[in-house]
Amino acid sequence: MLYSWLKGTRDAYSTNMPLHWTHRFLVIYSGLLTVALVVGAYFAFDHDGRPATFDRIRVHRIDIVEPDGTPRLILSNRASYPGSLFHGAETPRPDRRDVAGLLMMNDEGTEDGGFIWGGLSRDGRPMNFSHLSFDQYEQDQTLSLDASFENGEHFAGVRLNDVPDIPITPKLIQEYERLRALPEGTAKEQDMAAFTQKYPAGHRRAALERNGDDSVALTLSDAQGRPRLRAMVGKDGTPMIEFLDETGHVTKTVAPTSQP
Image (tube, rainbow, N blue to C red; front, side, top):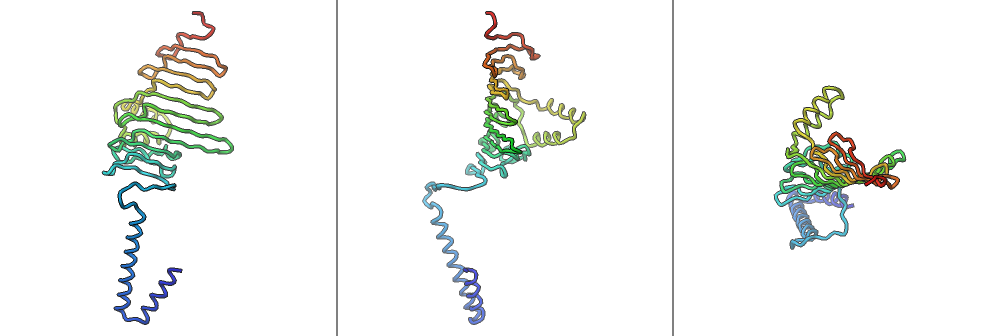
């Protein structure tokens, strides 16, 4: 209706009024419209600097930044979830295309941890996952909390990791993704081995886990990530403690039936 009214007024002035009157009308109309927009913006935002209050907002993604623009926290749906951030620059992460969640950055705009989650039912089979992690400076996670359900199996765990001091830069991520995309075969295996030699992975040092077979276990590992002690309670409720050597062989078992 508004468009029709304006169109009719424009036609009337253009056919019955002199050109300078038509121009004057347009100038006055533009001025009134500008004043209305300014007044509307003034009252739409809290002009005295106090925080605005909303009962509810509907967004796809929220980016929290420092005054200089450095990203500090991103809350996003799956479609807009970011890749890895390194000093404010984003590197694509194809493996994050199926998650929604929250990504945290340090004072320099580099990823520092996050919380992701997802779940659905496909062909009548439900699955879900949640993952909360905290990273070492410019590196991978040193502490994580995980929970998942897939193929009828439940898992939950807390994990502590040692990670190297080599920064995970955008160049390193791109090289790793390039190697992952290579055709399977000897050449890929050799290239991946060389990459791992140059950029060693971290090692798990401790894990408290509820496993898919309904057992629970506490595993402690040495600096090379080799399990050396495992305390567990099986599905049937039987407790057991195992001591392992550096090759993974059990050297001693402590169970309720063991003699002191």
